[in-house]
Image (cartoon, one colour):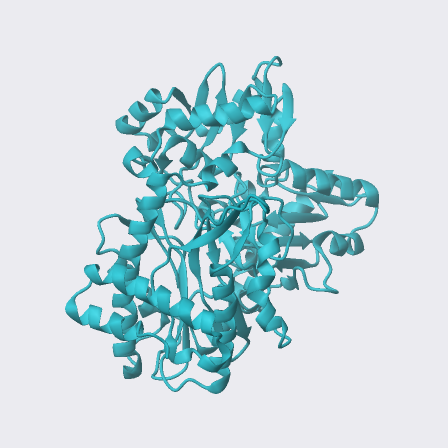
Length: 594
């Protein structure tokens, strides 16, 4: 599939030979350590042919590998076929890590090189230490993409726009004040913010520079002596200039950032998040530096009342659009005239009928039958399966609205569900319901809840390899931190105002995939003088489960009541948005379980 990239791989190796580099690591990120990136930075994709959002390539003069996680194992295997790049699976026992593999492949005095603009300070330092321990040399100035990628897409120049305070619930000036108050607590008088979503949140600024995530390619420097946004001037119109001026923010060119940082007064103490700031820009600062987690991450994660109210309304409109989509699927699947790509197009059509819609929050995953087992499957004209009147269809989709971001997964049967399909669907549902009704003490971390979603599968010797939940932004990234729900330890605690996904699944390669996902809001729970305060979740997402796939014999009375109560809420809140036919369809889908 990826033979077309062989010439790109060899072009890179030619450049490596020219400058005497033995190995190069190419992450799938940009200068801002983003998960989703502009085409301008997709050098890893150009070299390997792999297009997933998570994956790191390593190229030597005679070998190449791609490391990715379980979400992309099947996709990567397909895309890397005949590419000259081998697949390496992350977090699998017995699989070599990148550094373990390099330790075997390199010899004394070999040069391991990276583009320091693409690596955080933490990651670059770790690689430099690795090289030192093994007798290799490390170089952080190998900007191969600048030299060998002849047809490289230009940096996006779409106009930035203001996210109105009526949706954001707080002015940019207020946010800057809150950020700087946290900066001062950490002993600094300035902060450099490279993360695009953090800049967008802080300044109430949005853009179209990255597919699915409404951010603007820029850097932000905040200090007691003044604030500066580094951005291509072509992207800034008069309205944005006035907005930034009112917030006390000056504008400089994007490419001026390194020079500017190099001239920051040595008397200034700058806070840097070493996991986000690039190695190149961190080293440009010659003043005193304080390293710590960006305060914006935690502030941004806790939504205010305006954002929460907006998200609830966005969920209602999104749910109504999904009623139209799933009704259309049921009415048309058996004709054999539509495929997985058509499902995505119809989903966009129904969502776009809402005036606050600003695009999808990620590329829809519409996986029919065996494609549902590819966790982050993306249908193409070549791969798309035609729908028929049987089998499972997994649809993971979401939208960006001015008042909120949505992310929902539903798995439905197109007809004749098997006993195995119903059994596995119900196992996933039980874990999903357990997270949804969880109540937990203040201070609980997501890793402490994760097993609630998995225990029913574990009892039968099954599991899934992805996390159970990720944070979700407000008209921003569909994936955000600091919180999550997964097995891996994460010190971030769940706090009121955080929105997190709840999405267990089961994947059986070559057969089907099942995932059920809602977004949940952390809210106060019971209060106890003896045991302290508790928290719980409010389910935000509004769309029915497929009762045709539920094995009632596997559910407890509590679980049945939970589904029935949820379906009653879905019916009540979505019906006002629907036509009579659509309301009748929804009523049938939300009938109480016997």
